[in-house]
Image 1 (cartoon, rainbow, N blue to C red):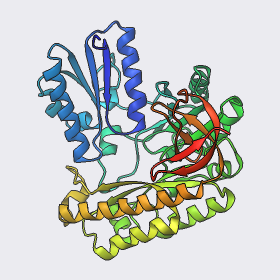
Image 2: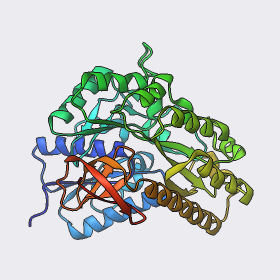
Image 3: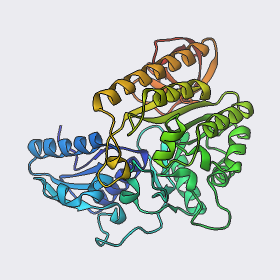
Length: 400
C-alpha cells in the first residue's frame, strides 16, 4: 500500500484537529505530493517532545517527504523546529495557511469544520486574553477572536449535510466566544442559534469551558435544550484557592462547586469532566488533598490529569518547584480517584436505555459522553442500547 500523498500528524487539542484538516485540504487542492503536516502542541513539555520525536521518525522512514511543522510549539520555538532535519517549512499559528505571507499576524478566525471521524468538530474561537501563570498558549495563539455566528451556522450546515449526527464546538478559550464581536454575542447565544437553525442536527456538544465565564444563556440552554449534550468538561486545574490564585485562575473552589450544583439541579442527567494540574509550584499535600475533595464535591466523572510541567518564559517556571517524583505520585493518586468515580458512574447506568453514536473500533458515546462497547455497529450510526453492565472503562450493552 502506497504512502498517502498528504498526511497529517496532530498533537494536542481539538482545534488542532480541525486546523490540520483545513491545511491538508489546502495541500490536496494545490496538488501537493509526498507532504506531511505536523501540528504541534505546547501545553506540556512532553507534548513538545513527542512532536520532535515524530518529526525525527518521519524523516528516517520517509527521507524524501517534505515536512511542514505548525501549531503552538512551532509558533513559540520556530528556530528550533526549522533546524530539524527534514523540516522544509515552519508555519506559525498567526499564518496557519500554506499560502499565507509569513508574519501576517492574528486575523479574525474563520469557522472551520473537521469532517473526519463520526463527529464533526467546529472551531468557532481562537486565542486567549488571559495569562494563567503556567500557560504558554496565549503566546502561541494570540488574543481571543471569534468567528461570526452566520459563518458558524454555514459550516455547521455543511457538516450536517455530510452526514454528521453530532457537532462539537471547540476553541482555545471557548467561553470567551463573542466578546470581540459586539452585539452581545456569547457562546450560549451561538448554541441556541445552531439548534434553531439546524433542527436536523441530532446532538450539539460543547467542549472544554471555563466555568466562571459561562454566560447565563449557555447555562439556560444546557438546562432546556435536550439536543445540547448533558456533558461539560471544565478547566478547573486545582481545588485549592491559594494555588488557583497563584495560577492566576479566575474562579475559586466555591465557584466550581456552585456551578456544578446549580447545573445538576436544572439538568439532573449532566456529567462533568475536568482538567487538573498537580504538583504546581508551592503545592503542599494539604493543598493537593483539597483537589481530591473537589472531585467528590463537584461529582466529577471524566478526569484529565497532568503533572505540572514548567514552560519557558512563564511566571510559574520561576516559582519554587515541587519535586517531579512528588508531582507524578499525586497525578497517579488523582487518576486512581478518577477511575473510581468513572466506575461508580458506569455502575449507575445498568438497566438504562441510552442513545449512542457509534464510532470506529466497536465503540460509541452516549450524550453524556459515557463510552459503550457496541461491536459490529457502523461508525456514524446513532441508535438505542440497553445497558447490561460495564468493564470498568465502558458500558456493555445490547440493542433492545
